[in-house]
Amino acid sequence: MATNEFDLIARYFAHQAVNRKDVALAIGDDCAVLDVPVGSQLAVSTDSLVAGTHFLSEADPVRVAHKALASNLSDLAAMGATPAWVSLALTMPEPDEAWLAGFCQGFFALAEYYNVQLIGGDTTKGPLSLTLTVQGFVPQGKALTRCGAQSGDWIYVTGTLGDSAAGLALLLGQKSVDDAALAETLIDRHYCAQPRILAGQALRGIASAALDISDGLVSDLGHILKRSGVAAVIEVDKLPLSEELRRFEPDAEKASQLALTSGEEYELCFTVPEVNRGAVETALAHCGVKATCVGQLRPGTGITLFNAGEAVDWQLQGYDHFAE
Image 1 (cartoon, rainbow, N blue to C red):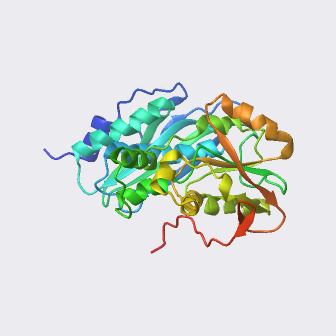
Image 2: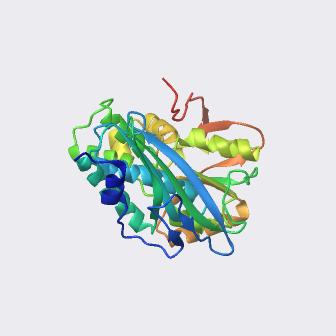
Image 3: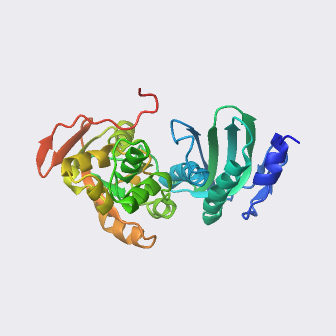
């Protein structure tokens, strides 16, 4: 007997380890019914991932699921929110139970780690794609936004940058390395980033603005600059690069350019007033995340790059979903 939509939902999505007390009604009805804690605001984000654009059609579904959920949770992290619920709209050419089993393995593993409950969604026939909507809580008036930065604030990034682009280059066959373990590490970092949930929460009241790096630092930082009406100076020699990236790209300038343009990193970029600089390291130490100061905001518009004290004119562009 052919597998229909309701068979798929019952078999793969209706059973999960997370059952939150704030979910009054979830999968199986026309809508989910949810309770929002008193004193909290609801943060909501929606993202789509399309085969051939965000992941290869032949990619491991476990990794695809992790990437799909992590990318959405990263938006909540950028707002300083605590994740709670997710809905999923899944489109696929035909029911593929082996693919669904792997997808659910990766999806529910990450959802359980962050105590996120799947509360509903949709399945339909068509080209393989995923659309997720995540929802979380942030204390009233405490959400991190893109519009609070001021001239003089310092620019920070969490973790390291560039590994995702290196992993993608390996996946696409644009570059190869002799070390199989190195290749696997970089590919894993492309697919399996960890959203900086605890870091975002720790930065509430410290950061003046924040966002996650999904389209590359030079592109995403531009959103803060536009919303806040300021310019930026970035010291590219201070960018945090992993040892794996340095081995992948020994040329220091090219490695820095990768770090500036690498999309789907899901690290946080945030700005901090001088008065709060001393609090950054202490706040993030509790969640095991390292942050690096890579520049400062200035009056004006745009981004100026300096390398070892010298201005550089690198024509760089972040990831564009509609670029040829």
